[in-house]
Image (cartoon, rainbow, N blue to C red; front, side, top):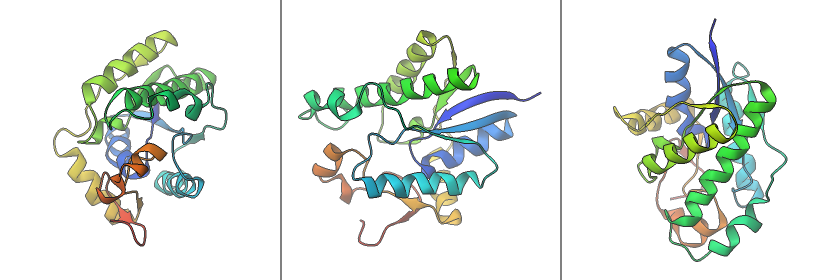
Length: 195
């Protein structure tokens, strides 16, 4: 019998390799979409639709619609932090706590995230937050660094092959305002006018 695993998916391009690899390892993956950190609303919708496209209707997707605590109110005191700083660590925590609550609701005992595929994110920090969060919720954390063994390069190729929408900034209003829209952070197809 396959072991059920809840995979927090930060976006469809970044979920390509983790979903393929974990499925090949025999895990029964359920994808989890948080989305409260994505700005503006139209961008969140594009990313959510891309994740649904990746799932192909064959992989369950949980779309979060209740955010406790509210994302913006929680991270706003850290608005002046640089990208990759304390605000990002808090954002990772909020997303993974949302995923952990969903895993508990669904009776899934194993938790993982796609966040470690990005070369722009601190995989050690993400895994530490994930492990702590899983323990707090009585779950087990699957430690992975998906960017290893050309994971990021593979994700870019898979995203292009699948025609997935590709974002050009991390997602929050703060990263958008800092001009990250000109730096590619993920694989897939960019929207018209994107860098």
